[in-house]
Amino acid sequence: MTSPGPDAAPAVPYKLIATDLDGTLLRHDGTISERSRAALATATAAGAAHIVVTGRAVPWTRHILDALDYQGIAVCGQGSQVYHAGEQRLLTSVTLDRKLAALALAKIETETGPLRLAASRDGLAGEVLVGPGYRFTEGPLPCIQVDDPAELWSAPVNKVYLQHPTLHDDALAEAARAAAGDLVGVTVSGPGIVELLPLGLTKATGLSLAARRLGAKGSETLAFGDMPNDLPMFAWAAHGVAMANAHDELKAVADEITASNEDDGIAVVLERLYGR
Image (cartoon, rainbow, N blue to C red):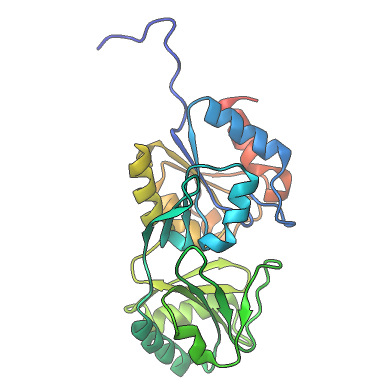
């Protein structure tokens, strides 16, 4: 094997940088700090590709991508959607079987009692429909309130949101997996956000598809996250970095813990790896 010449450019530490949004790249006010922007710009100038991997479906993600002047591929909807921001089109889209989801919900409610529900419709303009009693806690995102829960199932959906009047998120997710884990996937993606997904679908599913298009592998990927829905992404990537504000379950498996999203935790790591 020949050694690289003295003028050869050094290899970048990671070819792909995968960042979650809420609680990770985004601050609590929904903005991205100038320091984080600069660190990502330095990494991409060095030859790394930045890819957003978020639980948000495309309609709740596009304005953030626009603010970043993001023209590449993003993984949205917990991996159900691979979206080309520059071309404004879906490359792949996976929907939740509505009959299977209804059966799963019936089994879960047998154990937990009545649930409060919302549903994310498929597509570039897919609305989020919110049933009686359901409350989103992650800021003002556009949604449509419906009085009749049957409306949640009137069009294809990529996921269903669950809330319980007394059960904590982790307890509700555990109960849902125990009752219907053979029918649907269950994940916790934020405070008050427990989701039902197509069985086997995770952020890692969508990320692996997107990475293939970018010519990158898991062994070349650095991933940042904060919630249990990032666990599969950490398992797939070479190096998983949990934010200081991350869920304990994610911190337990992270290769590294950085500063919080409010304290530019992503920038702290990228500046160390790629310089300022």
